[in-house]
Length: 87
Image (spheres, rainbow, N blue to C red):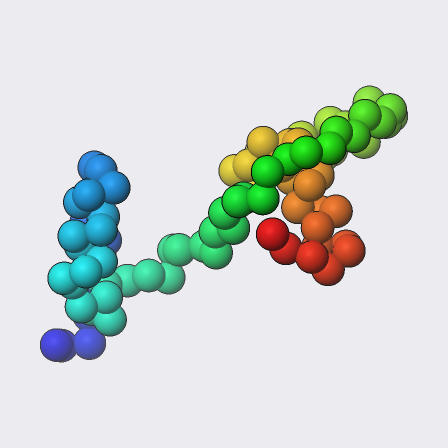
């Protein structure tokens, strides 16, 4: 290889992605744009209802949008990180 990396191909389905990962040499691709992904596996069996100042809720929604996640998931991520437990 000449030191350059290839861009990631478009993978239109899970099957295409599985085939690509199984057969490709990932060291030849530029993975610098990838971000860690956390999968939520544990079922949600409890609910939380809280009142917040509108400005705080808007700030949460803005931060969540910047991270590309729904704001309720962002709040849950903050709580999980604070208590040091990740499902």
